[in-house]
Length: 391
Image (cartoon, rainbow, N blue to C red; front, side, top):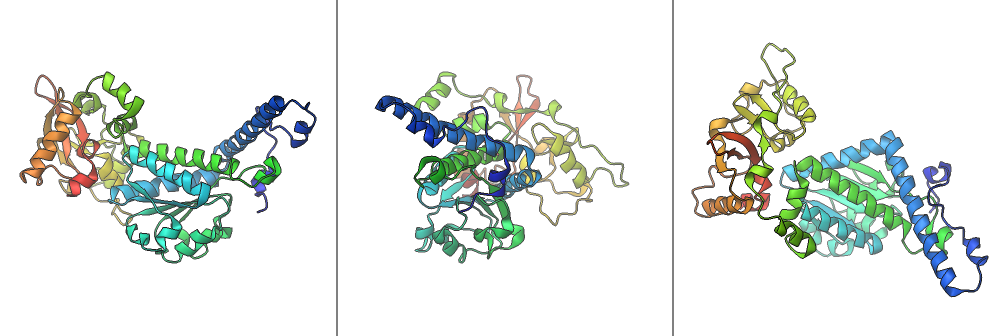
């Protein structure tokens, strides 16, 4: 495939220059020397590819816009109970599987779908609220192009590929234009040119780095504390052991302090603060939480669930109690309780049937201090998965 215009126009990477192939020929006959120089050549070439990728997303407005669109699409799928379906073939498929593993460890529900298996029944894993993430450097992998014919064209589709123009990418040929999100991941030198073999190396390195960036950006958007969420889902190995040594995590340590949540700023409309005011305030809120008044809050997930057709001029006081939650309706949890104790109590109450009416999606947990004051808040989804809340 020809190099992208981006690859042709960028200046050579100066910090870690790739070792030219002919330099290897100028070395002595010492095999160890040649081995090390080859290793340095590979590392320099892949570092160059990552540097160019960094420059692309640092300077290219279109790439930045697409990246934000991808984060928003995944966030919307998650808030609607959907999943991220990641697909790829060969080495790109291995990167796709790693992406799924990282997404799931950060409580971003996802699954790997192999294009061949999709054509033999696995298409059934796709739901109307899902987002499809495709990894294909060539942008024309036959198995993926074939699979896409059988996936509704309005399903949001993100493609990590060498293409920089969505209109020319074969993966999007039969997709609805407003559902296509291109995340370009070009490399400055083809692998044949750099290494003499077409084995995916630099191209899979850039795909891995870009999907890592996407995953962590989504985690930051969805979770006020991704670090805590990761440890909740990763109790094993050295990572889990290091978290266990610090002792159980307390509800008070993960709570968002009420007095740190910004009040909705009204734009002085006759009806008072509106839904648009709440969204604008949430965008500036470090935690994503906003206060509609001194005694009411709107959680980050409620903001994320606002649909495209919502009336942004609607007064906040006219919204339902499930959106604007009064302090009296916050479910009290003591700050000294561990996260696992609180989670266990919620699940027991739900299994008993008594808790399903008030311990559900959107519930605000009010964190009670030693003086019995509710001075912090936590979304129930932060300690109990949406899957468990949907049962």
